Image 1 (spheres, rainbow, N blue to C red):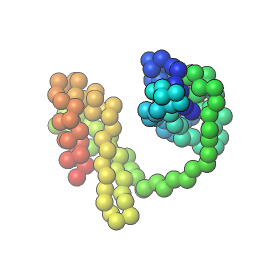
Image 2 (cartoon, rainbow, N blue to C red):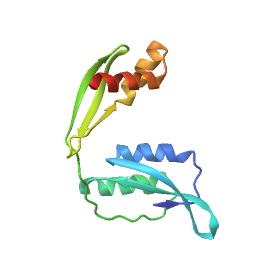
Image 3 (cartoon, rainbow, N blue to C red):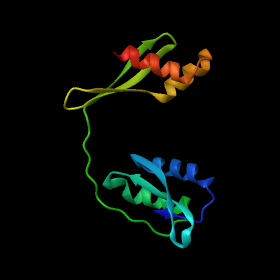
Image 4 (cartoon, rainbow, N blue to C red):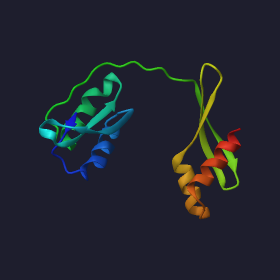
Length: 135
């Protein structure tokens, strides 16, 4: 959906509603609209069964008066979620493996944020420790 007439304060709430309606992902992209107005394009990815609920959330929570949709395909890397021990405490990490064997380690943000606050350390230090612990 393209939006050029909404209070930007509404966007975070709208994205929360889109996720609650079943979107797998959602994001905003700045856009130049007609008549040279600044605006955004709200994108949402959803399984076919969630399409109508996600569309309803977009139309209910934004000023959009229509939206476009199309089918998409995706490739998903094999992944595992496990907990690793760090000097700050345990952190869940997601490890995805590419076809060539390259691994991507992504610490769970909420775990890292909680530990950074509890231990009064920089968030990036907890992230680094979690990546190192995942080896």
